[in-house]
Amino acid sequence: MDERHELMRERLLSRGQVKGQLNMSSKGGEEQDLLLGDVVHERASEVIKFILSESKDGGNLSRHIIKDYGHDTDDNSNLHPKKILYWQHHRASMFINYLLEVTTIPSHANASSFTLVLKSVQLGNMPAEAEEKLLEIRDQQISNKGVYAILNGELKVTDHEHGMSFITLAGMLDSDVKFSSTKNIAKKVMKGVKLITKNYTGESNATTSSGE
Image (tube, one colour):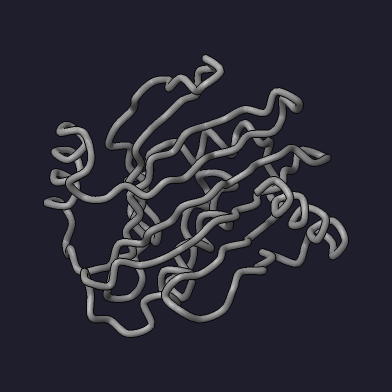
């Protein structure tokens, strides 16, 4: 996985930093091999704080923390923050939902580099308090029509220069089509994943136009 992140950083450097998001993901199909990257004008530590925070102000992408484990212990007795996050991308008349277990792993070799390990969580396979909080959030929503995106991979944020940082996302994306009969599910889910790298530059840029 590290080789894919390094490839993205090299491509971002070689093509310049003002050309928007770089997308080298596979095309077509309901399962896609993800490879996305961008350069943002914010330090890596601030980007990580933003990603792991909540935003309930509406817009195209809302974020909720439904379970905070505190710190998880790996095989080497290192402690890593771990949360279950519920992200929802509102697109036209439907919602793309992301239910993710996210573990933050700081780099021991580089203090300004962080990796978020993203693992999709299935409904009914979470702690009881997380299930209850998710139901509370869904009960407050105008519509529950939508699809659950299945996203597994790594999102890496690394300081660059002049207060900027690289964001790269590598992994696999699928969609649970049983939640919706809407056509082109994979295309809509991909739009939501692009927001994950595009919007995490600060709270003021947390939403985009309805066309994204």
